[in-house]
Length: 211
Image (cartoon, rainbow, N blue to C red; front, side):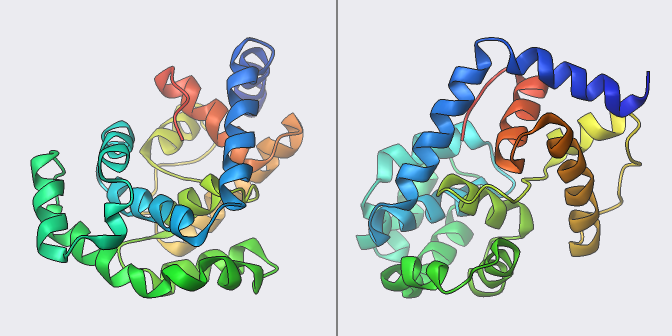
């Protein structure tokens, strides 16, 4: 059996289990969030700023605790809250979030102006400090964009373990796009979007479905 067949069959087994209901529920949540206000979308952007080099589950807890104060706290007070809540990089992340506020009022309009999801991701990477391709893809997936891959060490580990690629020295833009094309082929075989495939692969590696 080819290496990609093994991974495809693994995902199919998970897809045919109760995990599919969880994935479908997350997809509905992501699409619903994308229809909400600029403030709600901005809070999700803040969550993705927090996740860079930090645990997603801890970032979820911090997002829940701070909520709308991502918009109102001064940089100093926001850094203090992030520090108290255990974030590894409170000062840097607070500065990124405060700087990102300049985009808050026009997030939905900016997104609507980009018809291509990858072009929109490029805009996010260029204009929101603290977000690379992984975090920008994560943000856009969480507000309903389904054609982008979220490539982190969990995903790389799976692909390397199944001998579908060699471990890259870095996730440069070129490497990121190359791995994304590989994931697109897998998603096509499974009749899944990249957004759905990410959740199934995350479950394969961690046994959880987060966001």
